[in-house]
Length: 174
Image (cartoon, rainbow, N blue to C red):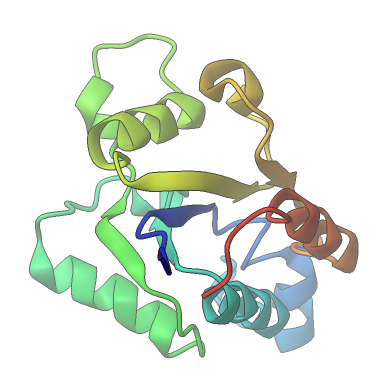
């Protein structure tokens, strides 16, 4: 019997310190003072993950705060920004974690947003990985160490790619 595992994997993405960094901003010498260009190497690495595993990507960056996940135009802009940077991955539905679900929580942080997302939309998720330049108590809140902590100034580096590959070592390939 040839059993195909239908469950999927999620890749949670921060933007600052993963796709956007001082290193990328400096090289592109932008007149715009805010990090605004995605790192092509980070994009290529996420494409490698997409090509190898049945994954969906979820934005957990503060860049998504204030954006409604049910607004089709906003979703189109987000998907277009990634696609125009060469990203081939599939954004999940919903495409972002939602900090507004717990506005009354005083100690709510990104780790709790991810936990909320997994509890509400992760019934078919076999495993997940997080790319972020901050810790946000991920291991404590989520119960396992799935963070690839990138460099806030330099973004996703080779050592981070190796760490990610190690964390995805038991994932079933496409």
